[in-house]
Image (tube, rainbow, N blue to C red; front, side):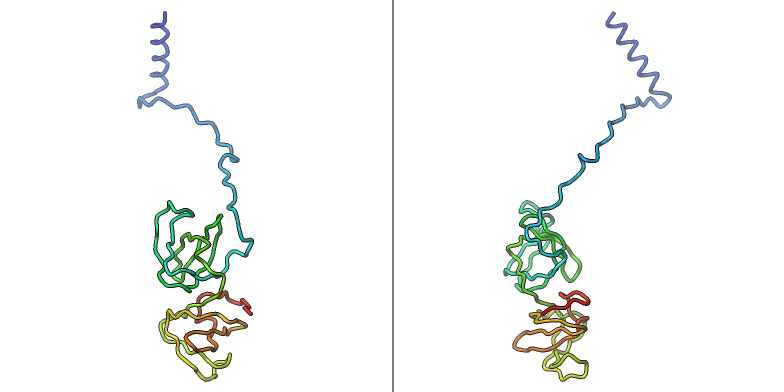
Length: 182
C-alpha cells in the first residue's frame, strides 16, 4: 500500500512538471516589510549632517564600512585636510573628500575646526581686503590647506603659513555656497 501511494504521488509530480520536466516549486510566503526595516543609525552628536570637519591625526584610515573589520580604502597622512561628514553611525562618520570619494572614519580622528583647501589649476591670490581689486599678500597653490577664519558673501577670510587674507569662495573647498561663517 505504501509503495502504491509513493508511485501515485510521483506520477502527480511528473504530470505537474509539464513538457520541460521542471517541477514547480512552492511559492515563497510574502516577506513582511517590517522584517526588512533597518533601524536608523545612532546619531551620537546631534550636529547637522552634512557638515565640514578636518582630519585630526597624522594617519587616518578610511574604511569601506563603519567598523574596524571593514577594508581600508585609503589613508590620510596629513592632518588638517577638510572633509565633509555626510552620515553618522555610532562612533563612525561617513566622509566625502574633494574628489567625491566616500568612506567611514572613527569620529575621534576628526576635528570640528574648519579648514579649507584651495582648488583649481592655477595659484589663487590671497588678498588684503574682500574685493577683487585688493592687493595680493600671497599666492596659494592648488591643494594648499588653510584655516577658515570666516566667510560672508563671495569672500572667505583664511590664514595659512603666516599669511592672513581673503580668497574668493568659489576657489575654496570646505565651505558651502551661501554659508556664513563667523
